Length: 109
Image (cartoon, rainbow, N blue to C red; front, side, top):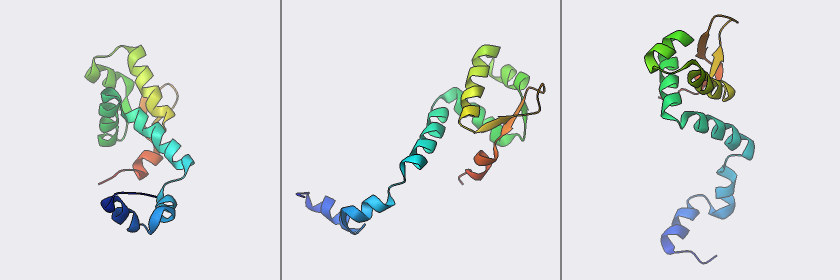
């Protein structure tokens, strides 16, 4: 491969191209992370997730009041977060949501 010197040097830190290939995460892991990053890519969902991390549980009506969103729009965003397994619904009929255990394990810093 004909690479510029600095790229060649950087590649050698990983013992060449094969070494670099070994540290690239598997497709399944990247797909799972992609779902999470997509769910958090919207500022509305990101702010909801921030609130979820600060509160052990939060009611739909509280989120609706804070965000000033319609039920349907709020439900859409909560469903995206739930599909990404970032939040889970509380007991049926409670209208509560809480961080999922997978989100609790993923807290960085």
